[in-house]
Image (cartoon, rainbow, N blue to C red; front, side):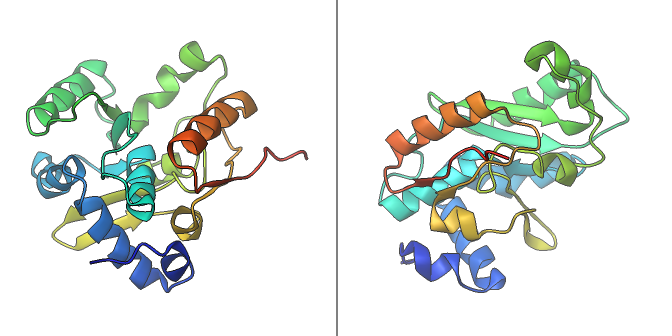
Length: 205
C-alpha cells in the first residue's frame, strides 16, 4: 500500500510524486472512471483538476475515505471554436451518465469561454485564457492548481507550482485571481475538514 507519510512524497523526485499522485487519485471511485473514459470524448486539452485532486490526496494522507469532504469534481477543457454554454452542458450530461458523484457536483468548464461570464459572476474582468494550462495557473491555491489526465501517452500532470505543497499539505494562496475573502473562506473550510493542513496567511505585500 502507498505510504501516507506526507514528507516522504513532498520532497521526493517529481517522477515519484507523479507516480504517487496517479495511485492516489485512482483510489477515488469518481476520478478513476473519469481518467479511464474522458479521452473517448476527444475534448481538447482536458484535465480533471482543482480541489477534487488535492482533497483526494489529503484524504489519503489523513487516512480518510477517498471522497471525504469533496464538494466538486472539476473537469476543464479548452475549445475556442465552440464557446456556447450548450456544448458545455451537453458534455457535462454525457459525463454525468458515467459516474455517480453522490452529493458532490460535477462541473465541466470550457476554459476558452470563462472570460465571457467571469465579470458578471465575480465582479471583475478577466482576460481570455490562452490554454487550459494557463487557466490552471490562476486557480486559488498552489496545492489545488493541479490537473491530471490519462491518455495514450500515459498519466499526465499539469502542476504550474509543482506538487510539493500538495503532498506537504500546505495551503498557500495563489493571488493571481482569487480574492482574500474567498481564499480565507476556502482555507477555513479545508482546515476544518483536513486538520493536518498548514494554512498560510494572505500575503501582506
